[in-house]
Image (cartoon, rainbow, N blue to C red; front, side, top):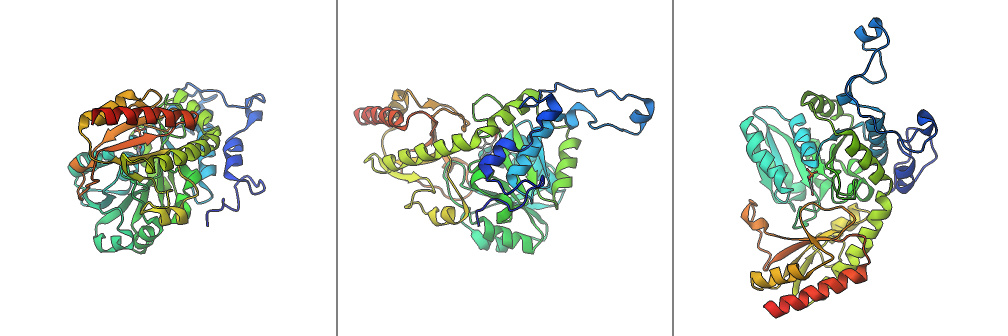
Length: 399
Ligand SMILES: *Cc1c(COP(=O)(O)O)cnc(C)c1O
């Protein structure tokens, strides 16, 4: 079920995803033998003759529409997604990828279904821009599974899924949701940033359009903003047309950094996974911690789905603390030195943020105590645990 695709376009023998990440999209002979493509800073493309110009006869057309640098990254990402991927669009941020993908599948009067635990700015887009253009949104329980069928309306054009959910880490039964949507001709869009195509094979699970905030694990170094939309044959042309109509493209240096990050994504993710699990297990044993929200832990309510559908876990998860005053939580956070406090994630470094989803979700979310989201970086896990121990000592002192 979770095996890599059996065939690849360039007729290589079957390669594991880790190998594909290294070889895909590379053509050294096109660049004097150098391993990597150059960064093309480009707008205008010159045509050799008037006839060529009139006929648009050229390998590339215009900077916004692609260069050898963007093409290398698109090819590498498409290869990683597998044979059902018909094309990949590169966008200036993950959020731009989300909004462009949704815009691609709706028109005025349509309706979309969005998981209640979706990345918060996705909601903002639906509640403002989509609403303004006459498209309505219903937020559904992330655990709905096949029950999504009851929410499909005649004008429903898309079901948007994200698993695990942002901040609260609910697992979604994506094959069941996709089967119900497919039976009614409704597109399934997924924000697959947490797992990446390495740990969740979106197209094999019924997703039509898979989105990555490339800012996170593809970039991997907290130094770029970037997003991708991968689409199957049924949806690719609309994605391409919409992103070009909106004039969206990613900058050449960010594209290059994304390609550079992608080459090492498998080794980074395996480390994020291993340390993330070790620290999640350690936190689960702490008396200060009520619950750890991490689908790869056996006690997590989403574990069975995670085990069935995913081939790995990244380094992002949350915890619920037993009730303590806010000043004790702040003392914990202010004591940590290896965990930076800040938004985004997916870089090499560890991060922590307090959060509260209850203020903006449609469904009740009552965790039972203060909530923190951790991103476990590639530092030594023992050093990170020692840092957390100092944090808990400060929490106890301030409680
Ligand atoms: C960060 C994030 C995004 C948005 O990506 P940006 O590149 O910051 O715009 C989208 N989805 C998820 C799940 C994210 O964590």
